[in-house]
Amino acid sequence: MADADLRVRTSAQPGYSANTLSIDPEEQMATRAAWLYFVSGLTQVQIGKRLGINRIRVNRLLAFARDEGLVQINITGRLANCVDLEERLKTYYGLDDAIVVPTPPDQDMVPQVIATAAGAALTERLRDGLSVGVGWGRTLRLSLQSVPRRPLKRLSVVSLLGGLTRGAAMNPHETASHLADLVDAQCYYVAAPALTDTQTTRDILIAQPMLREVFDRGSRVDLAFLSVGELTHTNTMSRVGLVSRTDVEELLAAGAAGDICAHWINDEGHLVDHPLNSRAVALPPDRLRDIPCVMIASGGKAKTPVLRGVLKGGMADVVITDEQTAKAVLAMEGV
Image (cartoon, rainbow, N blue to C red; front, side):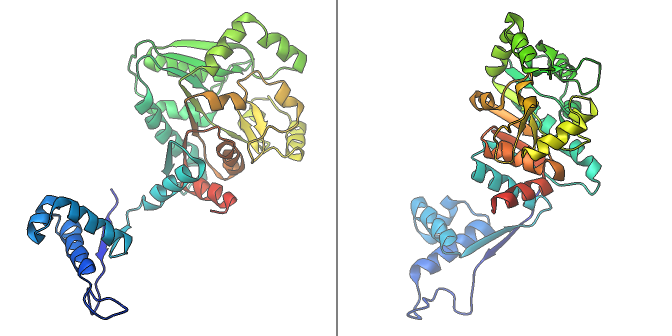
């Protein structure tokens, strides 16, 4: 818990007006009320009795004290910077919520600390009758370690993108299946590869009634739980063989910052002009804006540009990230 360092402003001549050097009754009364409220811990009713005024008057005096700078509260706990960044992210991007965790000294641990917070945040939102859309990636996989096993009624889990043609711990199907197992939910898969060889193949697949039904479900979920991927030669899509080194170089040249749901966007939140985006068997980013609550859990220096793109593009309602990444994202906005 953060410590509050509270100061009620005093001076050698408390309660004097700078212009007239006469006692200012309003400031004097407000200072007394502030001292009794913030330092002595009295209630507004108790202060009113002590000063002989009603509760409404006490409330106005306290507001006056805050507005005039008579009261200064400094939060000095180790999480104070994180709380400040949360409020700044929420305000700037119009988010419903932001969760910022301290960045660990070991950068390799960033996904784990974000995942722990993300799992707890997801758990708080899970309830009977909810439909949850799920993405993939290391952070999401790790986050499920923090989701306790508990059966929920009429909950469904929908994978928002196709899978891999070979087994892997980070297979989108595995992520959706694991969450569904934890909450005893019905699970819906996109029974197709996440990336096809041509756009024609992709169009044929998503036109199939079975896949169309899953995508319709995905676009109507109550909550989407996603991560974003950076654009490097060692990112998740590169490691599982979905994109080649040539693809990465071409995407960089096209201005891509990273991917969300297997679609490549720039740091402004716009899809880049690259053939991979027309071959993705996944829910398009623009349809995320219609989902009531989209949770994005990602962090680390390499993901700063793509995370900023998702936030700037209005694709997130809740963000879970680390302190250094939050600072870097806001710095890109000049705030």
